[in-house]
Length: 272
Image 1 (tube, helix red, strand yellow):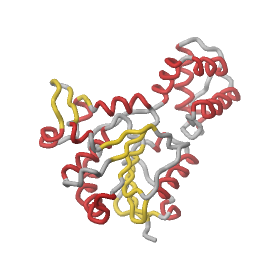
Image 2 (cartoon, rainbow, N blue to C red):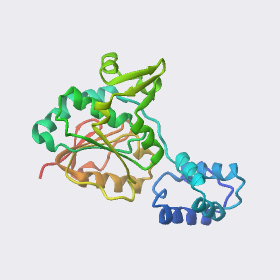
Image 3 (cartoon, rainbow, N blue to C red):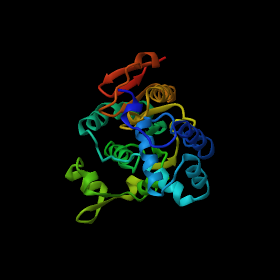
């Protein structure tokens, strides 16, 4: 089954291609690498909401109306996450990956949470750094395309749903209970994380990184975008650096990227 058969749009196909090209050019938001049946369905829903008849008229209003663009960005990004998602993987990271990195690199350690969404993942990294008594100057770079989720992440306030995998002792040490259903990350954990807006498909990557986590993000990309992204991640890692992916994601061509599997969903850059 191809993507075209997954969703049939009432709007013009050629004009849709034009829309994506112009959004990439004008807003520096490249949606062309995502699975298009999902992207187009969401765009069409927004257009129907405001009774637009064609993509060109919608695009012109996106350029003029900040609120319309903000809604577009919010609906087109996917932000579902939680602390310690797949706890056994984080346990492996804490026991086997990070101690070795910290021993080798000490204060030079560089960690990147790519596609960090509302912040649960980078704060999980920060909590583990605290648990390992890592030097205070070691920060987690946390990036996402969506400025709204970054704003939420900086606030560090979460519902019970996000906390489902957080052990009680960790809750007490690193969170403040706001009310019966809400928790706030404590300030010394927040201080471990630096948030930044970043487009994985268009922006430059940093280099010499020790640990990159990009989990449950790549599943929304098409195959060409996935291959490009994994190649860029591999190039960003230092020799011996580790890429941590989601539990539904596998890199089948990891050997050609100079990576090896050290544990399911953990890939290490082969030493030079």
